[in-house]
Each structure stands twice: as C-alpha cells, then as structure tokens.
Length: 66
Picture 1: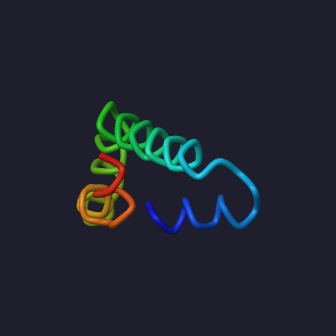
Picture 2: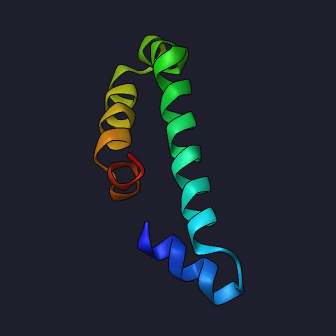
C-alpha cells in the first residue's frame, strides 16, 4: 500500500485517500469474486479459478488492503 501512497504524493494527490480507494477496490473485487464470479470461473476452468482465489489472498496488495 505504501507504493500507492508514494505515487499519490508524487502527483499531489492525498496519499491517505488513495490508500483508502485502493483498499476499497480490492475489497469490492474480493466480494464480487466470492459472490459468484468464482463459481462461474470454476465451472469454466477450475485451475484458473483456484489460481485467482489464491492470488486474491496472497498478493501483497490484497494482504495490505485488509
């Protein structure tokens, strides 16, 4: 999340607000995934669904968005 804060600061944006927006976006992406996208992906291509599920929990941006 610090990368987003630094980028925001460099362009004159509010770093705290930027971090909040990133965290909210990650949260909404996870919610959408769990609310049904994962089921559709699993029906179509299970390995990809498993990979995405894992990445939504393990990527640094996802871990820091909590």
